[in-house]
Length: 175
Image 1 (cartoon, rainbow, N blue to C red):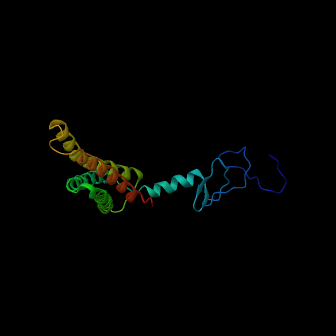
Image 2: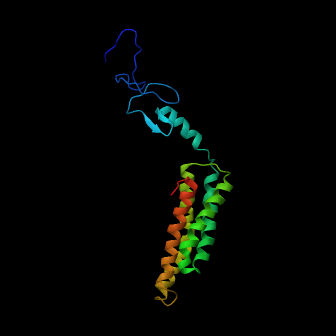
Image 3: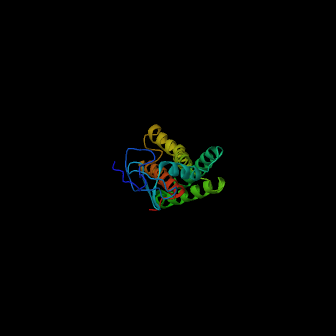
């Protein structure tokens, strides 16, 4: 490091051996490129990022079982309806995922966390599982006489589509 008299020393606050001119856009501390995190509003230091994540994670402990139960129940009802729809399951499952996401969002009063999105998506998948398993068992036990393989395909497709649409709707990912 070359120090010139009269100029302030510009080193990373976490790595005092690294000179830098980069500053955190929130707290204005000097940060090196390995500490800097690029955000839409500029570079931030790890402490400011951590503080911002605490603001983002607003869910309470009771939101997780509530989201799990609600998403699972609505998904179970949706899978029951979808088993009669055949090809139209392709259209029904994303709509069911939308309703699941909005019901969960309403029930938890728009509180959010990454784990909450995942819990709701897993519950949506598990809600479609009983109909899938009943269809699979009827195919195995009755040797195909109780239903067709297509009903199993539609049931599996329902689980995939409702899970992905629930997660994407809750997480705010724009496709």
